[in-house]
Length: 598
Image (cartoon, rainbow, N blue to C red; front, side):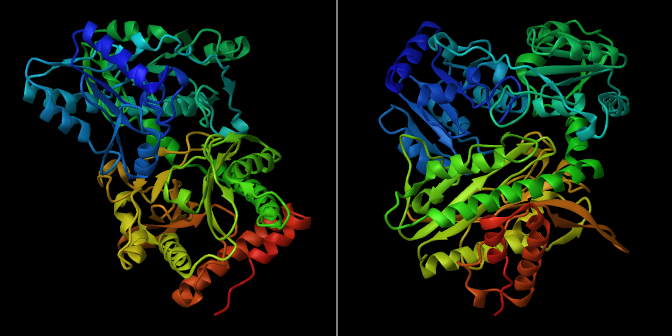
């Protein structure tokens, strides 16, 4: 079926159900960023391949709301489908809710599958629909009636994550969570977020692309932990081990029934932003709504975990040196076919896969030449990609999942002779990244307020970028995790406080649509900077190990302290990676880490 045919079928199903509007978020019962195929409804219906977007369909309108990362991409992919690209200011913008209140009339109805709707999103919709007299239906899966060949839920097996890497056993982790439950006065704790479940139980899976998690719900009580998961996904020996540790295995679909049967006198704790109304609306007992305690626990990496992460950064850095040595030897070579963006992705995977403990990419590689780089979440496909030839800039954002950690790095390299304007932009982004890298800040400061430090060099040029500067990164888990986020668009709430051991990306950028995009990204870790009369302070340890290309830098625009930081970083990269390299890759490393002198 074409997108237009799917849209027509959806509207027919809406008419039969007496529904006037259908809202489709990019979500599943676990409110994950990356979705299993079964829940990729927005992609199936619209053809838009971005990782985020909200669809709203009426009988005479169909829109897809996306933030600035996807404006160019969505405009292209939605052309001729019957869907209109609608611009959102940020990923938290609720422009579709405003549209609903302006265009739906009293007595009409709005359908959305409550199984994939967070409580906070439900509350916003309830307020909006009550204001305009619209009936909200949360019990209908209208797209599911149309998607006749919808894929099944994944059946990939679950694996034990060794204490050799985890550092702490699952029994101890569950005990830490129970202590937080007692503090909150809760006898039960429901967890639906997949990375929290994987972290608590020291298990990993393969149900979702790029993130080693598995579809499940977890219900912790004082004496028993219940894991709701698909039949046969846990191997029998692991089932026995879990039972010995008081972890019971129940069918995935049984979670709702168990929740409705909880004792009336008890209290259930859950995270309202990470739990769907499809589960919670059935519960009649008292509740405590707060962020999952495990979200904070897993965000603060232990010394044991950081030891493995540092080793993984060396492995990943060595793979990148191998890749860049190959790339520079083959790009723009007379008489040879031009390298294309797809080959960049293939070669990166090849070199990473040769490293010990590599499992998979941590997200879809972005290899974007010139104008493609202006789309922050661009992805080359066999149907649409560019050859890398002539002059310009190549942006590569990639990462790997290893048994000892998760990586995420962006580098921009010159091809041929970049222009002076490109060099100016590159230097400004580098200054922004260095500014944040060198920061010392109070322990407990809200992470969003740090954003201005990175943006200041770009704001000085009256430039900006539409995405956040930093996101949390998991430990062989999700490449995007909370609670911290370095973005002035995020509310500086208490739960966003910067704590010791957190790993965060540092990735300012600058994008000129139709021309080029620049982003330079390292992962950094909160380390102690010492104590003063004003309290404890933190600093960033740069974890990522890979040269930052110095060829596009305008040296006269770096001050001495910035130059010292870059030379010091490159000395560390050289010392840490050289023992792992030889031949062309080693020669490339030595060349690209040569100290700069003004």
